[in-house]
Amino acid sequence: MPRPRLPYPPCPATPPPVPPGPPPAGGAEPRGASARRTAATAACLVLGIGLIVGAVAGSWLTGTSGRQSAAERAFEHGRALWHTVPVDSLFPRRLHADFAGPGGAARDWTRLGVAPESDCAGAFDSLLAKALAPVGCERLLRATYADATATRVTTVGLLVTATDRTGMRALRKRFSDERLDGRADLMPRPYAPGGTAAGHFGDAQRASWRISVLTDLPAVVYTVSGFADARTGTPPQPAAEAVAPGATTAPAQSGLGHDAMALADLVERELHQAARGGAGKGGRK
Image (cartoon, rainbow, N blue to C red; front, side, top):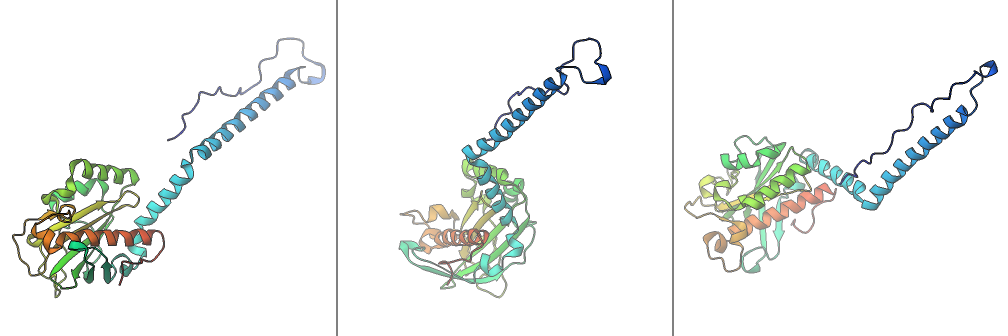
């Protein structure tokens, strides 16, 4: 929080007037004027040094200045990742996660295709597009994965926003307060690369999803999963509910919720590692 400005008195622009009297001989400065001018200058110098020292000490004691500038630099660096980091770093060809399936089973996924980077026009259903509109759309990146059996497919999306950290915090708060990430009418849309197991993965096949609004980076990471055989009629369920202990819905028992949850976590981790300048570890295979 910025330190409040204190009402410090202004330094005098000129020394106090000299009482009237006969001018000294030879145009010399009146006696006492020089001393008063020196005293006024010294007072202003002391006041100025005090203000500078106080400001520096306040920043050092609160410890906010350095942290904020470092966080802002990291945030802005994250905005450029989409055109500086290789696609294989953001969306690895293969991903693995232990204990990511129903009953704690390990899971593996293979990338089926990567969509050309684009804007967000037509990428979301109207209600989700409206909910995301306040943060803007710098770029949209998407990839689709299949599980090891090629029976389940999942699209992972990375929306690079055009807002600042305040805007991201506001969006995250709204999603949390209004539970927007759990509304079936706010499901993300899939990306279906032709000639792959996800070729028929359309809006009607959506069964589970996750939306994660980041605040340390200008990004929204989302996933949406469905069956590769193009079946419809599966009641959609948010991934957070589908992975809950005891869940018996089709997205829960089939592992679609686990796919959506785990792939969102893995890609989000890859994004953070790229932002820190490191390569992904552990999640790749």
